[in-house]
Length: 191
Image 1 (cartoon, rainbow, N blue to C red):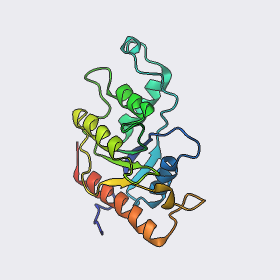
Image 2: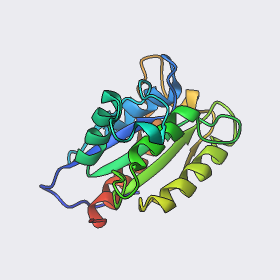
Image 3: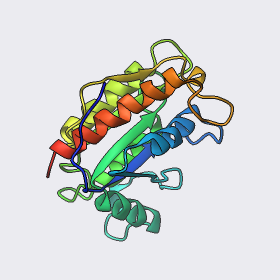
Image 4: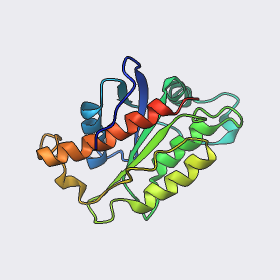
């Protein structure tokens, strides 16, 4: 799939990885997407593992981690979610990050940012449940989410080699087609 992009415009993209595990296949995939992204996308991972659980009582004096996170997302033009599936849903750490970014009420950092959801799993269905649960939240948060190509990456560990690079030219082309489609999605969605 070849997608033409608007050239000369750079878009900062916040990448959220739904797994905290050091050797997470989702983190490796996020890094692969960062390397494969067209020049106009400037992807960087925004860390979520240090965010205290969302508690509305803390909104008046938010923890420094919340402030840092909200600022990083606010500065991004778009968001890319790369996540595993836990118990047919979104990992708790990612749901917490979404909640932290959506508050205080009326001050969501997500509003209007184009997004994409990539779910990856060693299983055959590629995190389908997490992908769709995350999309439900993104609809409410007014994140226009890329519909095609759908990215449920089953047997995801086979897509990358031991160094975290696409394991074959076919894998590279496949992953590049996803990030190229996202670049086009970001180009055409202005907020």
